[in-house]
Each structure stands twice: as C-alpha cells, then as structure tokens.
Amino acid sequence: MSSNAPATAEVRNFPNAKVQPSTEAPEVPVQPAPVAPVEAPAKKKRSLRSLLLPIIGLGLLGAGSWYGYDYWTDGRFMISTDDAYVQADMSFVSPKISGYVDKVLVSENQKVKAGDPLFVIDDGDYKIAVAQAEAQIATLAKTLDRIDAQTKAAQASLTQAEAQKIADQAAADNAARAQDRAAQLLKTHVGTQAQLDDAQ
Image (tube, rainbow, N blue to C red; front, side, top):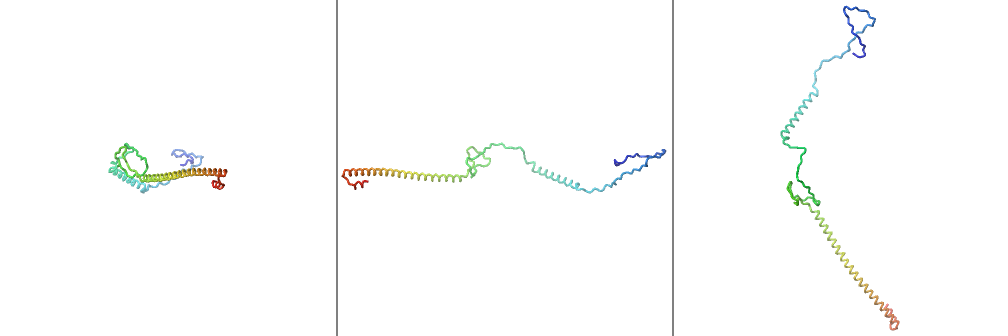
C-alpha cells in the first residue's frame, strides 16, 4: 500500500447485529495493488564464469605441479642466501706508471709475496719517449758545441781587434813623433817643407 492512501477500518458484518443506517458516505471497496506476475524459474544457462573457474583451477594446478617438479629435480640442490660475504686478505695493487698490460705473470688465486712481479707493462711508449729525450740532448749538445766555437772565434776576434788597436795606437804615436821631428827640423832649417808634409 502506498503511504498516501487514507487509513480505512475493515468492516465485518455480524449475524445478530443490527445495521443502522449511517449518515456517512458509502465506502468504496479497497482493491489490492496489482502485483507483477511471477514467472517460473527458467533453466539456468551455463555462464562464462562457470566455464572459466575450472580452466583457471586447472592452470593453477598445472603451474604448481611444474614448480614442484622443478624444485624436486633442481631447486632443492641450489644453495642461495641474501647476506653472504667472503672474508679474505686482499690488497689493492696500483702501478707507479700508467700503460697497457703486456703480460700477466701470475694466475688466479696464486699466492704472491711482496716484491714479486705481477705483470709487465708495455714499454713501447716509454722507449719512444726516451729516444726523443736522447735526440733532444744530442741536439742541445751540438748547439752548445757550436756556441762554444762561436765564443772562441769571438774571443779570437776580440784579441785580434785589441792587437790592431795597439798597433794603430803605436802607428799614430810614431806618426805624431815623426811630425814633431819634421816640424823641429823645419824650425831649425835643417829639414824641408816636403819632409814635414810627408810626416803629416
């Protein structure tokens, strides 16, 4: 029933009861609300869910069987851990020079002592550098020899120039004395003007 319908009391007739005429309006009989017809349950069709559940179950059973077989044949013999470590005496080795390793003289896990050679570094680059340095030394030695020879030649030229200066000074002194003699001779009328001109 809907909540908007007026509440009505049910009226029953009793066989010995006197019916009095009522001044009220006659009552309209209440009719029940229409009810949707109920259909009989139809046959259930197989749904997709009922097909998928067995397939998924078989898949899970197959995967579990495969994992169990793999564990039984291989997995139980494998050792694994999450926090393993190796304790050993290790030393870090670093060369004093850089280069490519030419030859390794030890094998893995071989015991070595301090001072044992471990590997040979390729010395090709260093041989070239030494040859270049030796060539530069030879060039500089020849340059020094040349400069030394030039110094000796300059010293000889300086000595020669000093000797020439002394000779020129002596010649100048000699010429001045000769001029003075010629002038003295001319004053004393012993010499001639021509001798004085030659002395100048």
